Length: 380
Image (tube, rainbow, N blue to C red):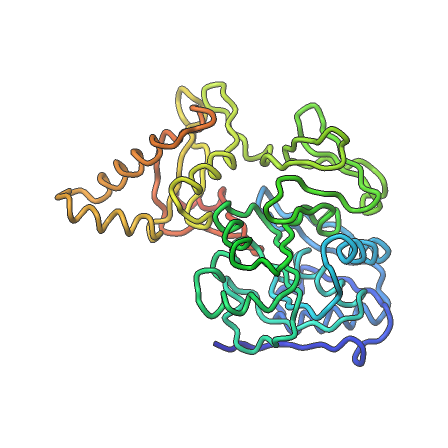
C-alpha cells in the first residue's frame, strides 16, 4: 500500500530556528500541506500559535503555546525519552499537540522527518524509508500495527517509539516488550497545556518519571497537579487520578476523575473496570468501553458497550450455532455475563450490570474512544 508522502530535510530546506502558529482553520489542508504551512510559519518568525484539545473528555479547548516553551519541551523529550536524535516518522494529526510537537522536535533537533497521512495502521505505507528511527504512535495504531505481518516487521526498524494519546492495554504492552526488545518504548504523559508530555515510563514499568524542573502533588480529590517551565511555574490541576511515590518524584496513573460514575452511592472508576475486562476477556481496547447509563434507583448503572463486529462477538456467534440457541443476542449476552462473572474483581461493585451492543465506536481525531458521542448515538 502506498499513500502520498512528504519528506523534509531541515538542514538544507529551512536552516535556523524560527517559530510558527497553527490554527484550527488549517484542518482542511492535507497533512503534507499542513506540514509545509507549519514550517513556513516557523521560518517566518511567528512566536506563538493556537491549538485545540482532542475533545475526548468534553468540548475542545483552545490554548496558546509559546516559542521558548516549545523549544524547552522538545529538548526535554530528547534528554529523557529519546536516546539519539534521528529522522522521525510523523503519522499523527498536525492540528493536535501530539503531531505538531513532532514537527517542532525535528526543527529543534535539526533532523529530517518523513510524513504520511494519519491512519489506523500507518506502517502499511510502503514508502516509509528504512532510516526513520523515531516514531510516535497511539495505542490504537499500535494495536493495528501488531495485527498485520508487514507492519509488525516494519516496526522493528525503529530505535525509539513514543506511545501517547491514551492508556495502553496490558496485552499490547507485554507483546511489544517480548517481540521488540531492542526498541525503547516510552508511554508518555501530558496534555496540550503542558506542550505534550512532562512525564513518561518505559513499558514494563508502573511509575511515570518527570522531566526537569517538574513538581507534582495531588489535590484533596486525588487529582494530579503539576507545575514546571511549561506552566509558567503555576500549579495546573488535571482530571487524572494518581498515586504518588514517597518523594513526590514519580507517580502511578489510576484513571480519570471525569470517568468516574456514581452507582447507588458507590464511586466506580470505569477505566479500572475496562482494564480488567480487556485483560480477562482478551478483547482489544478499541472494541469495547464502559459508561454509566441513567438508572431510576442507582442514579447511574455501570454498562459495558461492545462492538458488534468485534472478534469476541464473532467467536460467540460461531459457538452459538453448535449449541442450538435460537436467539443469538440472548446467547451472546448470556456468554458475556458468564465471562464477566468469572473475573476476580478487585472491587465487586466494578462488575458491569448491563451490556449493550453498538455497531460503531466513535473516535476523536486523535484516535481516543469518544464514549459520550457513542452513547449519545445509541440512545437517539
